[in-house]
Image (cartoon, rainbow, N blue to C red; front, side, top):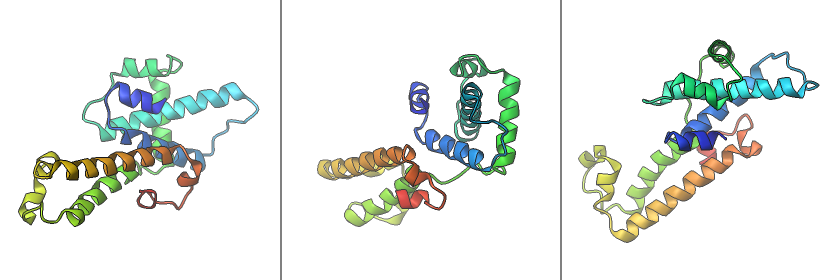
Length: 180
């Protein structure tokens, strides 16, 4: 669902990793009084936490955001603005306002820049060109070199996104750099 929302609004897919991270840290640290006996209450709480976490990440990580009325419709209008704002503050308190974390995709992006310089050192003329945009820098690559780097990037990002869905990689202690 999160990937569908992020793709629909054309946000960076890394938003999902950040949102899931906040949700997991909130769930592990919160002292919520929701019992597993009431499945509807659990479902509603999960939806509220997910919506609120997503909204936190969008406000922090994106230059553009979703209109709040549209955002409420993502939750099928089950929640009010006040409920989401209250949950946002609760989540922020529980995670101690630590919402800007390194993600697998971010680490992979930085690592691929280094990998490209190791694989194709003759292409990069000097260190002053490092500040140029990635696309401009890749322009001097041959077609086969661009294809190799593109395949590595796409596969790395795909596997990083898959790791979000696997609880093994989300256990405490496994760093995004290790997953990358």
